[in-house]
Length: 470
Image (tube, rainbow, N blue to C red; front, side, top):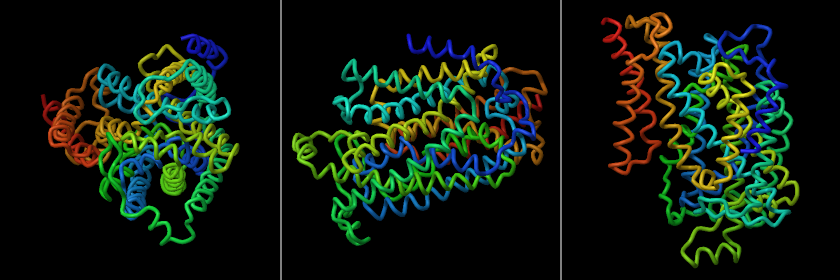
């Protein structure tokens, strides 16, 4: 709480920052594709990669399934950003939250914004956890285990609060500062991932692609508490791990600054440098650790060895690895806290964007204290994408199909209603059907993200026709 109060007090110096939260971005504020290249390369070759790469080994995926699944899944994600998110963002130039308010009404959009903001805080918190594992190496801090939920020491809490405070301060400076920080840090992080992969491959005796396949093998049994991943798990998970950002339209808030929809192609830098090269490099780091006596002792006891990015990177490239992990946590947490701040600002309109971002950062810091968000990142990312993505279908289906089927665009704004029932029931029905199907039939949640998205969009058009006639 003390850190949150201190961060909030900083906002007095940031009240003049304008992010055009409730207006079209002016022409003189638009940014070239280079701005987005740095941001996406930095955000997606970042802290999550140090966690997700090793977690793929804990689910026993084979080499072919991982390589092929990531190749195609990331391609689908890039296409989603370019032809859905960036295309609509450049035409509308509103944040997701303001656009959704025009369609849904103020009362209804508040529920979404609360859920959106909190889920983004949890994601940012997991990245603060990642950075904390790096600080823990020189300080001798005990690393959290794969099954840990609660913090394991007061020192851990102090380290997380310090990192969270600095990360939040950067995010509170607005999109320009977030983008600039990513441009500074991303080259360092990319080089570090590449170096980690090369060193880890050498430690594993990999000199050719066939050696890589031999080391990786046909996969293994998943660790305790994990499920077995196949090609389809990897393909759909890698496509929809950022579902909230692309088909969920959260990155309307980012691409509204783009000069052209072609800026959407810059997401490929994040997908193939971060979600391909970096994930595989991080996998190799963890593979080295699994060959160690310490990991063997955990496995002999029937428990999962810990996934701690700081020690893994330090083992490969020393202090440069520590620096890279710290910076990697920042470059993911910064834009995530920024997005969350935009969500909270719509709920608290009297607050400046800086104040709401500081609130988001405070919540993210609290979340970072609990290692469970990072250790269960595969599951958490699948859940938050599934919850938030169908809301983006409301915007997409309105944009492409409203005129064709005689549906009034921006219905809540034009009819002065605060609660658009068509939006609420479309999301609720699609969520209940497909989330329930996943739970009762044991279906991997990422398999159902796209059907839920399509269902929500179609129901929105149908219900809009019904309610607008009345």
